[in-house]
Length: 194
Image 1 (cartoon, rainbow, N blue to C red):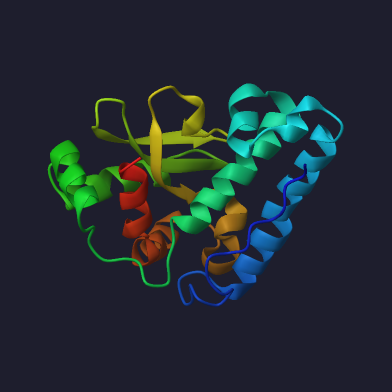
Image 2: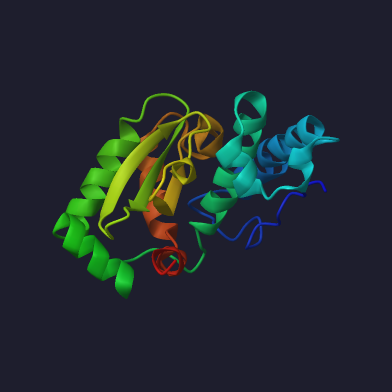
């Protein structure tokens, strides 16, 4: 079995003006596809070729882990965005955010602080802990919360420069404004229910 590049859940220009079609073309077709192609080459002919992407992430290391985790993280990131997203959270995710952070504004401030100060190539995640509480965590490089027992990712933002440099240059704060205009609360609610 080999993995294929999952299509974006929207058209390349659907996230404009916050994320350009040029960024999506470069980020999805080149970067995300590159991780999948490298992963397929690394697992071809091995017992890993029959495993799911999540199983490979959870049981591998080195180059296999890096490419599998980046493939997973990118697919999760695309789903964390929606052309119909943004605004305030609704439903169970809103209740969980208020219970864990006090208010949406306090959660957003914590998320922004973590993301802006997450050094170098990295990811910032909203996650659900085993006890049902929410937290904001940072990972570096290909790090992903699915490798941690009892942690469920709800949303993520990609902080590698290729995610935002074309549109925002080195201004992460402006990129975060774009993220909040696109954040997919429906996807977060689906993950929260898992």
